[in-house]
Image 1: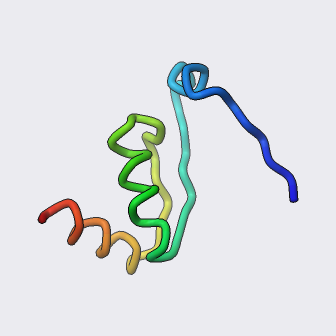
Image 2: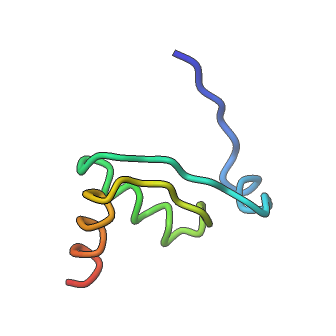
Length: 58
């Protein structure tokens, strides 16, 4: 398994950060990444998108 790690303070300096995720088990992590400003373009499936919208509208 390969991983690339970037310190969060360095990640915030990158102008375009694309997040790719899917699955209902990732909803909280995706919301956290968006709220934290760590992602500015997100590619997800429609089921995950609907779950995120339901959760943030509460």
